[in-house]
Length: 278
Image (cartoon, rainbow, N blue to C red; front, top):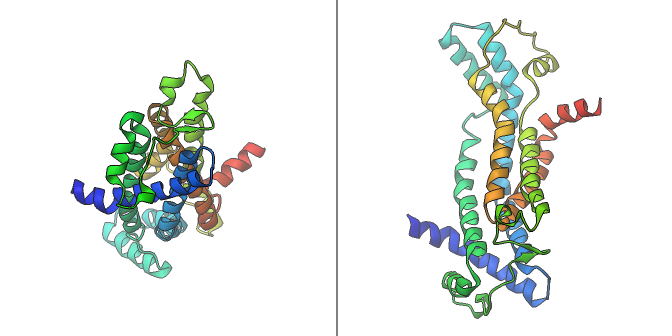
């Protein structure tokens, strides 16, 4: 499986990176490796665009009918069979396939992981072994072969080192994990729908009477927690991993924010912005 993964995904991606790098290096673009990582990430994002769009559209439909589902559960509380029947009927009426958002994710994950593996190899190898190790993965075209180690600096920042190791000499390097966590928070916030009560009222559904001290369902609780926990985790990883991986992740996230805005709008971020303006 490891061999198949490397040959089908990792090796082609690293050769695309090499091609981009050699073109940028040939036309004397400064910080060619850093810009190659950015361009490669954007290319992968464009390749995955149809899958991501399909996933986001399916998610948007599920969010739109979520208030209706909540209404059904309250209306037919205790009658599991009736809830199931009405739920399937609701899916059919709105043209929703609850499994439609899963397949794109399953297809995307190996590609994203392969890109991550490539960048780990690229920024993690020492100059002494970099040329030989990278050239082993290059296809048999002289154009793709490295003749010398590439410059691993990007605007003065070493892509192969992590912020935790540079903190003493470059205190401002903490901006890297901070920006990474912030961008991830923005994307996570955009993914979340409006509060249930507000969504119900906007869609003309009678407001469900609140039950005192009612426990939140697992999905709602997980959503609230992950909004903050996931960005903090990504920020911590960015603090510990090579900066080149943060460059890739931030480019990936920025592109994702733009795509999400195009398909779903500001999402949960809209309500947050309104509160901040008050």
